[in-house]
Image (cartoon, rainbow over all chains, first blue to last red; front, top):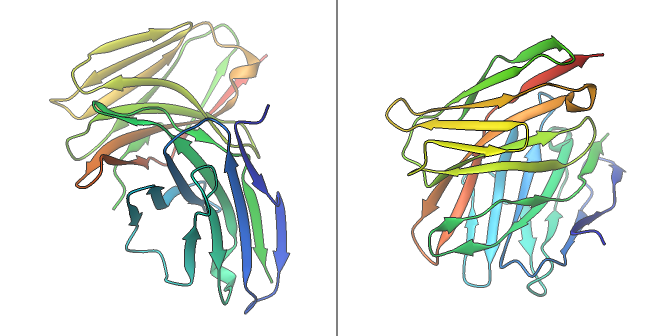
Length: 115
Length: 115
């Protein structure tokens, strides 16, 4: 069974469009994340979310918004897509305990290409 | 700003040799984690070492942590061609609030193991 899944795997769209990437985890984790990996393979946290708190990386444009319909899902909505949004987006999840966070489980990634 | 910095950026070794990758970071951490990423795939967690630990082993992996120098190393012994991948260190920092933590990744070391 896939632990963290993302759809679609590839997304090609034009500038100005609005798109969504879905993420689901079946691990029962309480925290989910979105990361952006650029062409130089640098991985940057965009959001972390649990049922109590959303933490937004201040460098993320407000065109990006996470939406969580339930604990197992954290979808990423992107409005007015720009060329610079082209990257691979990874969803991840983890459990957070009293002594700190544990390992994160990553989805396979969604390669977004904006033309 | 970026937290972790891996060194070297790229490493090429013969199968059977040991591979050592280093990671330096800037701030106090809750724990440090190492991940592997095969080309075109998501990240896979390898090992986690907490700030009060100095060394940890998992199979052919050995991780050390020196909090006074703010550095960590990952040693892969008896490397195999299948170890070819990018390796990332990630530091876990606590955020105020409902026990939220975030991982900050370095740029990664690209390891090539030649058969």
